[in-house]
Length: 362
Ligand code: UD1
Ligand code: UDP
Image (cartoon, rainbow, N blue to C red; front, side, top):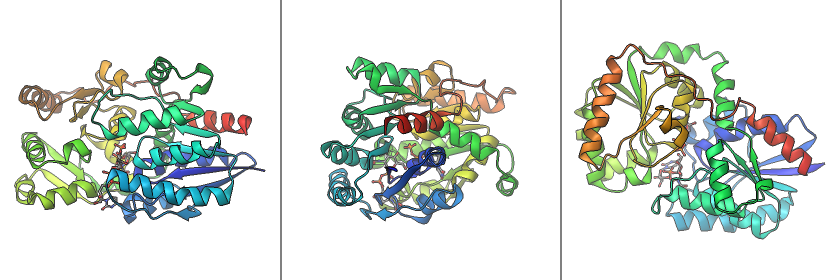
């Protein structure tokens, strides 16, 4: 029996893993999950395994938090030993985090077939940490599963042979469709109508106080209640910079601990629109047919920008903030809140395509 190892460590990776693991279970393949431990709070990690019925990791490398170099180095050192012992026939990595980068380097040097899920997106930013991780992981991987056509084109432009690029569609879309079909009524009842869903966690938006103050000012000018599940990175920075008073002045904000994925899908479906700097949430807004205002100024998901699902706002630029705010406030009073379907992330069968491909290769 072939053996496949999944390497995950961050919240979005647990969500991406769920449908892939389900699809692989249809085959006679032994599946092992290695958790790097980059995310470790109950509601940043375990909640996803419990709620989404993901098999528990066989190993947790417990790398915890650190600088980019510390996280990457700890994963590399600890992972190599576990993989040497497990001797998998193939390894799956997900997305673009430091755990992804570290795993790509280790696995590729061990010459084990490496499958990268959500390969190919590019923002062409020189400073964005996720871009660096993804470029390296893509170029070290043997098989690259792309979520959309633009990602496939990006990889081809970089010289990756076409036979290694597989258009699967987006596993996050699979999981969204799967979870919204479940009974989530308890969460639906929790939230009154008319709110914006906001998330905020990216390094570029949390590393300096001035930038965070600009974001707080920007949020304070939105004319609507805002539900805000707070990422631990942002929580820590708000404390370090003494910004809680500024946050609490905004009576329209409901700040919550991070929520599980089922609750998140309810929030996505029920909100009027989404304000975020998350790559995953900006995509999911389109799954829920919601308009998304992306406050990082990075060209994420070009097809969604073109179709008007994502509107970029650069919070460092006054003009961009003013026009973005007027669009948000206009969208809130418009009768047409539902966006058309986007149709660029496949048809909800990405995990099956991935599992079939892996089965044929192993
Ligand atoms: C990481 C990824 C980012 C991804 C995000 C998903 C990298 C470089 N970044 O960012 O691409 O969008 O995950 O959420 O890999 N913390 C806790 N508890 C936790 C996890 C984090 O308190 O369970 C706090 C710690 O103070 C930590 C900080 O959050 O220092 C940042 O965590 P880290 O994993 O370094 O980066 P993320 O912002 O989570
Ligand atoms: N998410 C969640 N609970 C939250 C916030 C986000 O389940 O409180 C989900 C979200 O729906 C998406 C994923 O986590 O599927 C995105 O993770 P995040 O924004 O942390 O990272 P990114 O996608 O930017 O890498």
